[in-house]
Length: 305
Image (cartoon, rainbow, N blue to C red; front, side, top):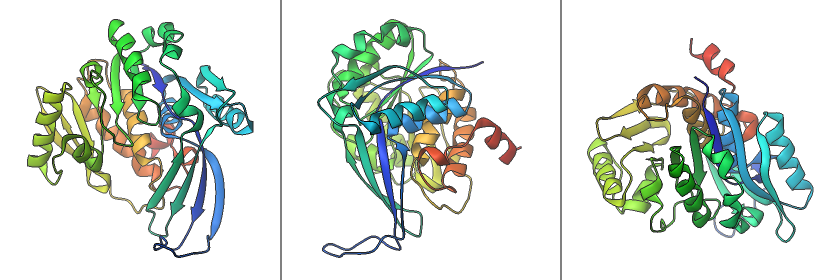
C-alpha cells in the first residue's frame, strides 16, 4: 500500500548557527559555523513522507523572491507535487534562525512571512487534490482558519486528518472536531490541555481532555523517551531508539512525515507506524540540518533490519 499524503504547511529557509552553548540574556557569542537549508515544519514533514515512499503533494505559499524558488525546487527534488504552492507578491518567503549547541539542543526563531498570509479561499482551489488523498497533515505555522477549511474538505471526502499543533496556541472552535489524530509533543500537550505530562497516568488524562475537546486519537511525542498513543480501543507507549543526538532539528517533523507514509487511513496500525516513525527520527537526530537530515526508506530499513 502506498499512501497519498497532502501536507498543508510552512515553507521556510533555515539559517543554522552552530554554537558551543546558548547565550545568556545580553550576552554576545561567536558562532562556530553558519548554514542555510530548506526547512519549515510543513516542508520537513512532506519530505519525510516522500522519502518514506508516500506520493506527496504540498499546499502552501512562498514569497516572490529567490528563497521562494529555492523552497519550491527543494520540494521538487524529492518528487513532491508543488502545483498548489502559491506565490505571494506582498510577503516574503518564511524563514527561521536556529541556534544549535554542542549537545544537539536548539532554539528556533521563525518569521512566518508568506506562510501566515495564506487565505482560506486558497483551499477551495485544492479540493480535488485533497479529495484524492489518503492523509492530510497540517501544523500551526500556517493560519488555523486555513487548516479548518482544508480539514472540512478532507472529512467531506473521507480523508484522514492529522494535526500537529506546533507551535502550540489556542485552537480555534471546530478544528479538533474535524481532526482524526492530534500529535503534540509533551510541552504542546500541556499548553493545549492545561494538564501536565509526566508519566502514563498524566498522558491518559491528557488523552481524556483531548477527547472532551473533540479528537479521539492522540500521539504525544516525548523526545528521547519515545511516544505515547491513545485510541478509543487501545493505548500504550513506544520507546525511542537510543542514539547520541547531534541535532534535534526536524526530528518531530520526520516522525510525523514517516508515520503518515505507513499508517492506514483508519489508523488501525498505529503501533507499527509509530515504530517506523521512531526509527526514522532516530536517524534524523544523528545528522545536521532540517531537510538534509531526513532519511529515506532504504536508509531506515538498512539501519533497522
